Length: 106
Image (cartoon, rainbow, N blue to C red):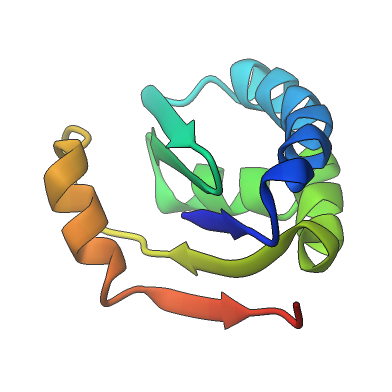
C-alpha cells in the first residue's frame, strides 16, 4: 500500500507507475492486481519464485520508483506471503496491517 502525501501526488505516482507496469509485464508474473482511490493505492503480484520477485523489486523501473517514493508517499506498507493464488482484497489489506512500514516526512 502506498499512501500519498496529497491527492496531487497521484500525477507523480501515475507517471512512475507507467514504467513499473511496463517492467512488470515483461517480468511475466503469475498474477497481478491493483486498485486505489484518492491517496491510498494497492498492488498485489504473484510470482513463480521468490527469486523472480526479488529480481523485479531490485531492478530497473521498480528500483527507480522506490528511490522516488519519499517524495510521493508519506507511508508505504509491504508484505510477502507464500501463496498459490492472490488473496481477496479484504484479506490482503488485513495482512498489510502487520506488514513492513516505511514512513516518510510530510
